[in-house]
Amino acid sequence: MSYSQVPRRPSQNPKRTLTKQLNALRNTALCLFTVFMILFCAFVFLISSIKKVSAKDEATPTTTAGETTTAPTSDSEGSEGSSATEAETTPEATTATTAAVAVRTFPEGTKLIALTFDDGPSQYTAQVLDTLKAEGIPATFFMIGQCVEGTDASILQRMVDQGCEIGNHTWSHATLSKVEYDEAIEQLKKCDDVIMSKIGQKSTVIRPPTGAGAKQKGLFDYARQNNQYIVNWNDSSCPSDWQKPANGDPEYTAKYVVDNAIANDCVLLHDVHKSTVDSLPEMIKGLKEKGFTFVTVSELLAAQSDLTVDKAIAGGYTADEAVAGPVGGVIGVRYVYSSGKIYIEQKLYS
Ligand SMILES: [Zn+2]
Image (cartoon, rainbow, N blue to C red):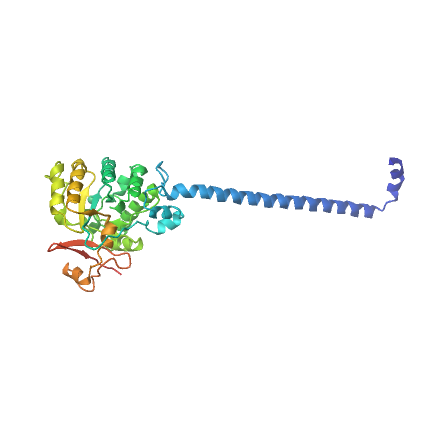
């Protein structure tokens, strides 16, 4: 065969040979291009699949327990169902909305009371949660952002899992009546951000430190944008546990609250004082004996269906300023007690 090919070669047209070679080259290039495209498509498909899987993996810890925690996720049992739904949303969606809180309703005439703990979390907060769990009751925690930052996320997760409400008490316990608009917003936002980083949800209620700041527009704007209520407390049942005689005397603290509690009460306590934390078993026992049902602040507000503008006016605001009841979901709320009745004043800045 090789012999027969030899004479044939010179007889071939060089142009045809060149064309043939070019055709062969083109076909090879086409083949290579096709193979390259197939490999390229396979590569793109593979990369996008990997991205989808890793995005799924990352979404859960970011929106539930945060970066620094080994705590159970929000969709673990005991979170009253609502936070589980919230935990499955994307971080962006969670940031834009306030965490859903399971708000229970009660028959008319039920004597409700909301225990609230300010200025924590502290070294005693776990003990508060132990007591609340043993008694089977919720409470509301108005936390300082700086304290949240130094606290293990599992403590905050326990609050959620035990049906407690998460409250914002600013980043550094700033007196909001004394700061500028931007500073007020920053104080509230930083607090919510750190809570979010721990448990994947932010606060549902705000308590301005010292109760001051009722005319701080930043406070109201922030609360409105984030669907939060601003809540103070009832002075008449407050044992003033930051000073003597309540401070240092658990029995006094328990007795003071039990003796002065009224229906639909909102009790100001601090989980940074050991004597307050030690007073809780006796206090809760006494309140139960008096027929109180323990609720979160949001549950207390939800039960205030009889609020009227007239009552707000009675609290000192003009008709234009006063709007009663949780209107539109986001209004500033301030408790005022008069003649043994509870009033909620709301001031709008729209
Ligand atoms: Zn405080």
